[in-house]
Structures are given as structure tokens and as C-alpha cells.
Length: 288
Image 1 (cartoon, rainbow, N blue to C red):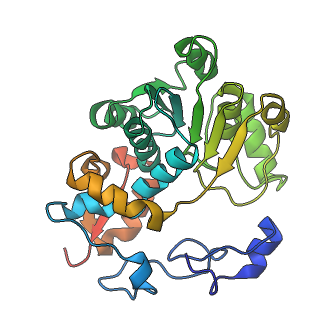
Image 2: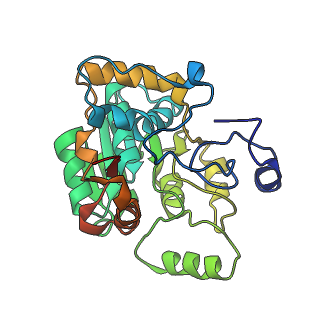
Image 3: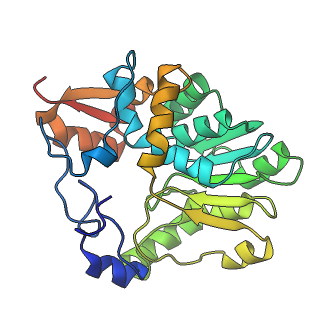
């Protein structure tokens, strides 16, 4: 993050304060061009660059820059404890890494929720967590059944503004977005709040930018929930993740479902956005 060189006007209006900028994120986060090039200049590299341990492949280390530290941020700052039951909404790269972090922190059971079979299969095969298909089951009811009626101790939302759900709430969110009555679609956050046990923690890792409607603030207050959110704290978690990768405690190669030359970047982003051909992450190789 680059605090002093971001565009403060937008974020101050939206969020009350300016925050740091970063490469390739958005105009609000600094407007800096992305890092898709054979070479880039890394500012403050004495603070933000980390040595990759011997034996850690490029394909594995790549995910120590984003998906893994983001997932770690959610599990660690949600204060997952040994014996906890943790539910994670979203089986993409971030959700899978949040689930893996929770398991390594001692969670008794981790359940990942999504609707894409290939992603849920990755969770079972590579992460070792349980899964729920939200198009097949009533997720809050199923989580209550799993936890003896209490609900999960920690609920981590790793979906963001593109959340989808069966039923009228999804249509309502689409209409209010089109009418500019809200900017984001907090479907998964709502469900996480309703599913979480009394006194539990809900942590949002999914990307949100502005305003949401139909937010169950009453449930947050009356259930005494802790509600937190973050992007990631790379400097805090990347060294630990690289160390765990070197000991094979964290494996990420399976997330790179599609590898292509940098010139195919637009196609890769389209595949990622539309989840075409089961794309979880498209990896670009300059010069390939």
C-alpha cells in the first residue's frame, strides 16, 4: 500500500479517510497501472519484497503475494481459535486460503460454501475442508445442524459485491444496483451474519466499494457479533506463508487452473470474470 501517493478525494468521500494505494487495483486506490509487464519498479522494496525460500516453486510462491495473505488476514484477524467451527463463503483463491489458514490455526471444522462444483472439489481435495453447495441446501440451517444449533464461531466472507443467491433477495439487489440505490451486493455478508453464533465473529474479505441496502445491523447488535473487514496485511503474513510453503503446509499450485502468455491477458481476465472453463486463477508468463 502507498499511503502518500493515493487519490484521497474519492476515498475520503466514500469512507471518511484516505487509505493506501496499490498497483493495478482501482482509481480510488491510487490509480496506479498494474504489474502485468516483464519488469516493474517496486517502490519501498526494502519493506515490501520478500525472499522466496529454496525449494518453493514460482507457481506456489505466486499466491503468497495475494490470495494467501488475504485469506490469512481474515482467519488471523477474526481470531480463529483451536476448536472453533469456521464457515467460509466463497471457494475461490482467497476463500480456499482462508480455510487453510483456519485449519492450521486449529479450527475443529471448516466448511466452505459455494456453488461451483470444480471449486468445491478443489476445497475437498487440496484444502481438506468440508463443503456446502448453497444451491442445494439451506446454508444457515445446515450450519446450525453441523454445530448443534449454535452456528459457526467464525464466519469469513470471501465473495464480495458479486455475490449471488437463489431467491428474491438477489433480484432485489440487482434492481437497487441498477437504480443506484446501492453500489454493492452484500448477499453473502447477510447470510454470514444470520448464520453466525451469538457472540461470534464475522469477517469480510470480499471486495466492497460503497453502499449496501438491507443490511442486518440489528442482528449484529442483538447477537453481540464482532464485525470486521480488511484487504490484506502482506508484510505481516507473507513471511509466515512462505515459510509454511517451504514445509508443504500450504499448497497453491492447484489454483493456477489456466496458464498463458502475457499477450493473452485480456482473454485470461475474461475467463476469470466469467469463470469460463472452470477458471479459478489465470497465470500469465511474460515471454512464454
